[in-house]
Structure formats: C-alpha cells, structure tokens
Length: 141
Image (tube, rainbow, N blue to C red):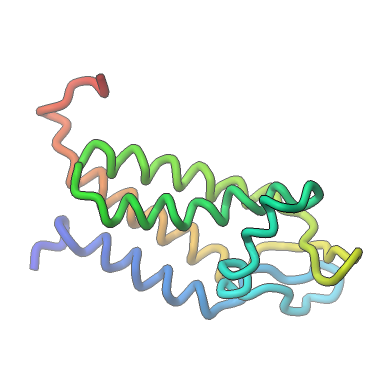
C-alpha cells in the first residue's frame, strides 16, 4: 500500500474515531469531564438554534463538510472542502463556555479528544494536498 496515497486518510479516520470516544472538553474549575467527542457530535446542532451557543455550530458543521470532502473524488474540490472544514473546526478554539444544563454553562477547556479531532483534520488535509497535482493546476481558477 502506498502510504502517500491512502496512509494519511487512514490515520485521519483512526484519530477521528478515537476522538469520538475521548473527552473533548473538561470543566476548567473542577477538571471534570464535560463532553466527549460523541456528545459534541450529537449535540452540536444546538449551535444553530441557540443564539447563546452559535459558536458551537460551525465546528459541528465541519464534520459534514469533511465527510463530503472525503467522499468526493474531484481533487480540487476535495482540497477546498478540506480547508473549509478545517477553518470551521478551528472555530472551536473560541469555545469558552459550554451549555451543561438549562441556564448553566461550564467554563470549558479542550482535552485530548479535541486535540485528536483537530489532528484528524490535519491528516485529511495532508492527504488532500498529496492527492492534488499542483503541476497541472497553477491557479485555482
């Protein structure tokens, strides 16, 4: 198997799957587990229906943009969608407070699951860059 062709995508998929089962955010004040990757994936849509939690919506949406980038075969579009997904995912660094229950927000800090999730996006970006032939495309027009 050619590592440059498939290896980065496989590493991305493995780190993404592991990130789902790890703690994504912890409460800064207590150090307690707040959200796992699975919790973030299931409840991230709340960011689009809640004015107070809108900042959660873009990182959640990045999962679907990345899925589209993985499934698409067009190399230029794959690269563009991967970059867009990474930018959306990086918006999660702005998450300071996470809704825990009605009216209560925990002071959140990223944990290992969050790091693995971002790392998976970097692996997918590396895969998309290596698949893209820059010698054929001098510009993105």
